[in-house]
Length: 290
Ligand SMILES: [Zn+2]
Image (cartoon, rainbow, N blue to C red; front, side, top):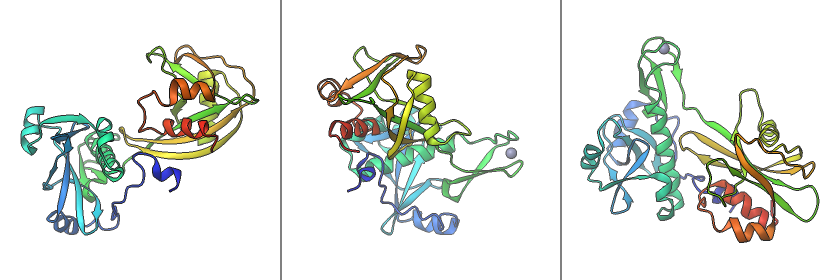
């Protein structure tokens, strides 16, 4: 299996049926033979440790088809927490990433997608141009301004995440301790892509701004769906031009080079970010792959 498919939250197998979800009649018929995930303010409503599935109510967001069966998502955020729990017979509200270990690959991808699309709808209720309310269309994949008619499409916010290698042997990678992180918690460098920037330029800028590192080369590794709430993580391997490091103390406490043995001992298998592309970038470097 290709690396990008093995990454958590990637590889959704639902058929998104993009050309059919624009037809309200088709969506209504499909919702009669369907299930819906229930979320409340970005978290999953859970019963006995499992995501609750309900019959999709009117206005539920269409996620896709599993065979001929529809999969929807419903947002109960307008209720208070006890009412939302009662509504679907749930016993707790759990952050989606906390459920990851108990989900199949497909369930994790579907739940993350549900969280992202519901978050987008809930945060686009008013038009950014004229301030009027907006109305959901295309089963939750488009919103239209009631005032000026502006069309609002779901937005993705790309971020780069980079494993930086030292220019000469012994093989070492750069890891940083971020402000506010635990004393022994080192991680790869990452940052959002800015307007007017390509991915590789974002890698070069982030490494220079945060760690004072000049980059000799940048190579794409893999990307990961990261709808928490609207991310797309794009992973790179970079080679530094020199060993020189000078951290921006507003962002980082320290950044330094780690050998493979040090990474194995101290980091790769001790951190709790097993669902993130960072884990993949570090593990593939430790195995000398990529
Ligand atoms: Zn408007």
